[in-house]
Every structure is written in structure tokens, then in C-alpha cells.
Length: 124
Image 1 (tube, rainbow, N blue to C red):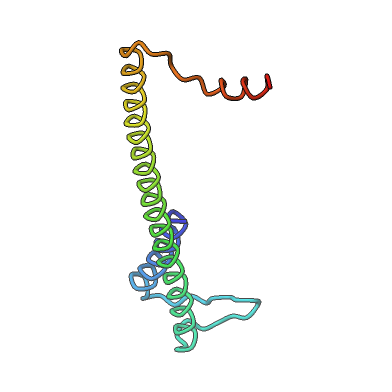
Image 2 (image 1 turned 30 degrees about the horizontal axis):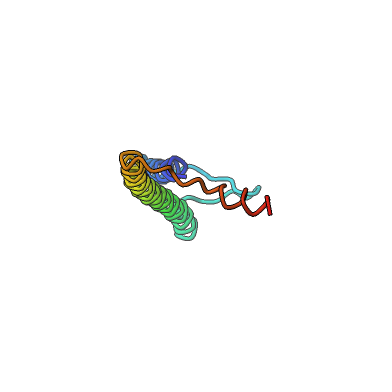
């Protein structure tokens, strides 16, 4: 989108520079089979409007492409922050569970098996 916008901006600028720089000679312009006199004010006006619209379209495409890129970068940063926070929480939870396990093992008591209750219930 950005590249296409830049191409349109360059084309509009080249057309404007071409008209301004080489406007000494008159050249007939043929549009849809009609020969237009380049000295006619209406022809110059319409050509200017067309170049202006192409320029505006190019600027619009350039700005929307830049906004989309900015939005994507912001979204990537938000996802990365969330991922880092989740990893930190998981590391903290893992450390807490390791401490509990180490404490149970140092007490010499038998670790609690969560499947014990299910086995006892199934035996009855």
C-alpha cells in the first residue's frame, strides 16, 4: 500500500513537473477520440484536477499503509508484553511449587497423591 502510494505521488509529481518545465510548446491531447486544445483553460483545469486526485489518492494510500504498519507494531508489542508476563507468572508458580515439593521431601512425610482418593473410592 505504501509503495503504491509512493508510485502515485511520484507519477503526479512527474506529470506536474513535466507540464511546468516544458510548457513552451503546445501539444494536442487526444482523449476518447477528441482532440483537445492544450491552451484551453478547461483542459488545463481538468488535467490539474486529475493530477490532484491522483496525488490525493497517493497520499491517502501512503498514510493508511503507515497507519496499518503502526497498528501492527503496537499489536506485536502488546502480544510480546503479554507473553513475557505469562512466562514470568509461570516461572514464579514453578518456583513456588518446587519450594513446596522440597519442603515436603525434607519433612520426610509421604507426598500426597491426588489419585489416592479416587482409588479408595473405587475400592468401596
